[in-house]
Length: 88
Image 1 (cartoon, one colour):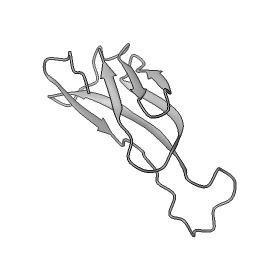
Image 2: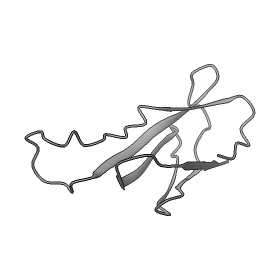
Image 3: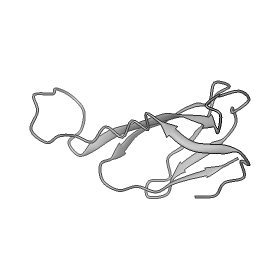
């Protein structure tokens, strides 16, 4: 990961990598996929002025940019270990 964010805790809150449990009674969706989204916070826990930060999943090339509230959504990604790059 690349961080150009001085006092940013790259706390990707609720990073939401909702890994499939593999046997539940869910319907729809692809087997082996998850939704990856979260919120960028500063060290003091705020999201002020954290829009415009770019995120990329290296394994898939999926990209997202945080909105003015620090929220980002990388959409559907494969389950398992992924590397997310942050560039501010």
